[in-house]
Image (cartoon, rainbow, N blue to C red; front, side, top):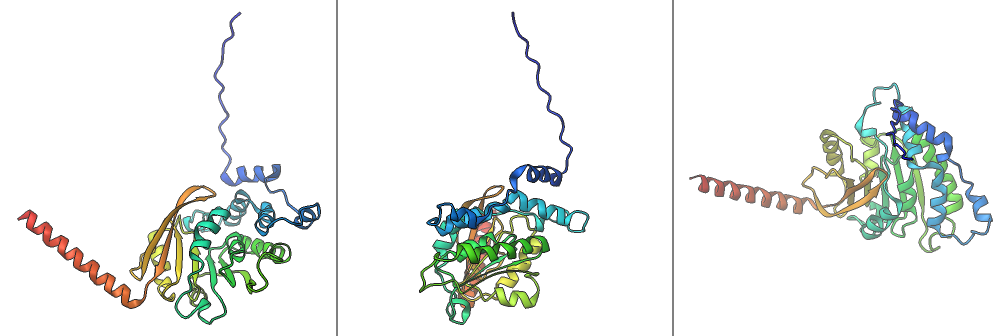
Length: 293
């Protein structure tokens, strides 16, 4: 006897993105891990990176995205592209960015005051990039600034566990992490930007930003010291005071995107570069006129 196959018609899912993510959370995506209990079960020799991975399991990207969606629901910022949540893969962030470029000190020495290199994450979310940077031997200070109350509060709690359960033994006694913090605030405010522009390495996941916001960020970043590194995601800084030194396609929570590594030039080098660019533009213009003639 033959059999007939009937095409399966899947029901239309009309739930909002927040409702879908809430369903995932309720079904175990946000399972909480007890890092200390895990370590006591024979994993005391786990590396610092492994301990950090377990700590961060309790706040997976989809969970953080849901929290942000619910925080913004019904507000004027609900549809703001600048507040879309996403995370970079921690391992690639450490190997492709921090290890390669974290050893660069801006003019005047680490932090500008000789206390050691400083890493800053602008829009630090739940603090994962900040904690990853804290394991990097290049930095003495790591700091994040986050606008949303929900994610900054989560970051503060995670960093408490991080300092207690991950950092001990993670770095040589001769090269300790001197400070680690995430705070709530607007990094465009003068009193905040005056602090992060002293950093040696700044990271900003600005993949969904519009050009006006990128331009504002670029203008603020010009106050950084020559030699400082500024990494953006997809959107380059719109400032001739920075040179693009590397482009790396890295893994993020939504897929693979280019991270752009900029270095702050001296004002003299930037002026010479701008003059050269203008000269080349004029030469190309003259060539076009000759061809048209």
